Length: 107
Image (tube, rainbow, N blue to C red; front, side, top):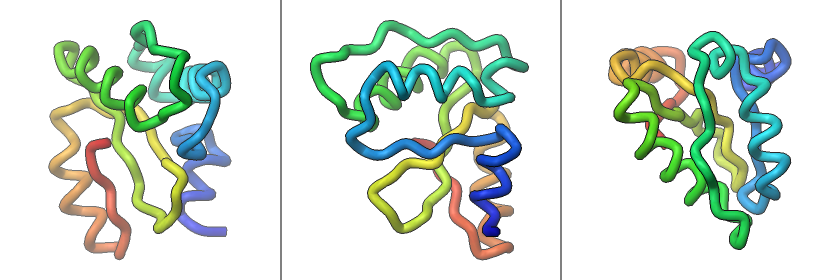
């Protein structure tokens, strides 16, 4: 089991295919532990495109004002492994993850 599997299996992250449907995306994202702990709300997202990247951009634009964002764990795939995080902790995670040969970035 890899690091990403541990995060997903314990509810700290979720994996989305790049062509995920909106309903599935919203449902899985709202089940992530930090989403619940931070009491976050999803902004209205456009259903006409099944474009995870655009949904993430929309969410980050809105959440930035609240001090949160979605981060991505790079897994060399066309899928996204993402999780909500306090914006003030992103730089630390980006830097420290490199020490264990992982890569996290703001989506």
